[in-house]
Length: 265
Ligand SMILES: NC(=O)c1ccc[n+]([C@@H]2O[C@H](COP(=O)([O-])OP(=O)(O)OC[C@H]3O[C@@H](n4cnc5c(N)ncnc54)[C@H](OP(=O)(O)O)[C@@H]3O)[C@@H](O)[C@H]2O)c1
Image (tube, rainbow, N blue to C red):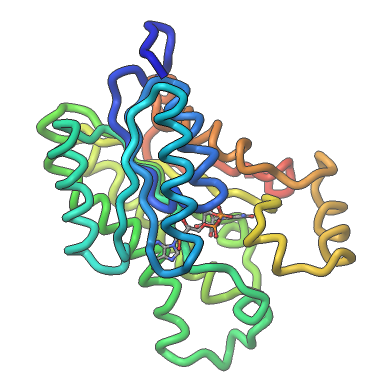
């Protein structure tokens, strides 16, 4: 998309971790529409992964934007560092990172007994959802400092706020993200000029989330939402844009709930 002065991210360089996923694709499109150059991260762990990332990257380019798909296993720091280095090599900087990478949801994980999890089970989501976000902060902080400004958005989830025994391994990792935002945001803003905030979505009707529920269970979930409907990927992307743009320049270390009114702080 050719730059115009009223775009919110004109001249910015963004990495969307989990850019091959549903919320990631919506975020990438919105950011490109607002003038950012966008690196689309994908895992390469599934057959669809590369195709999804390449498709969205090509879509952005067809619309006149700049985009590259980049693979990394985000559990591995060196792979994340290489990805961030590649983005800086390509576009000379990185200003924005939205960390959406998360262990694929599954009905099995959601329904497992939280008191019968092995150490490996407990660490599985932590390695992707938490370490996969933390690694981006570590890998990008000096580049962002050199640039005098950075915006990083983590993804948490509303069960971390109200407590939920189902999907315990998932909530555990998402809660570490929320804690990390509270703990690291002051140091990051003071010493690096980096804003760290998070989004806690409630029920969003993406393909991977919808798979966890029968039609009946889904109906029950929707009934519990005051707004009377599940969120869409775009609802999360719009808040990611807010937290990545100058519109949120007085917001530091917060987790913003985006759930149609179920959890009220
Ligand atoms: N949908 C919801 O209701 C909801 C609610 C709260 C929070 N969230 C969180 O929001 C994020 C996006 O959700 P979504 O519904 O868009 O999920 P999604 O479509 O399943 O996307 C998940 C993303 O994580 C990436 N990923 C998984 N394992 C990875 C690994 N080891 N290394 C690198 N990347 C990895 C996937 O990459 P590949 O596809 O390339 O493998 C994909 O891009 C997730 O973190 C999810 O937990 C979602």
